Image (cartoon, rainbow, N blue to C red; front, side, top):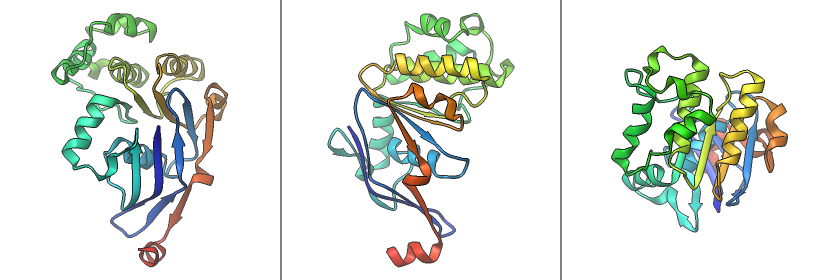
Length: 219
């Protein structure tokens, strides 16, 4: 189980986002709905250990991950988290298959990559350099790289943002079908995809923005 408690992220200009307490169960899928800038990506980064909360805690399986040193959080993310970033974070000069096989350096078994690429409809692109791909093709490479790890936690930041609805729905279905007994937390602007998930969370009810003055008063 992933839990957040009393979570607050403060930014350099003094503003902050305060989150309601959340529980994410193993084996369940969650979708976060909300407009750009409402704190969805920040929440994913707090859960993944990319960001350190200014207040509160993130626990995974009873361990307070947010209290760990950055190096340990990075190791946790490599081992346990399949993160599909909004900006892909692919190696543009490398081929599709090399972007996946590079995970072998982290101890990931990538022998199933062809079957995964085939399910995502991009097997024919595996020897193409990423810089030559469309935005939608890059999105599916990023998804494949996350899923090949068979992670316990899948965090997907707008995984269908560069795809049309039908392809996006098929890709989201792949995420759900490949989550195994793990936890899937996905961000999307497209509320038509929400019924596919076990739980829908409205960021308007979860996140509250505070001005620098309010954040200081609460500190």
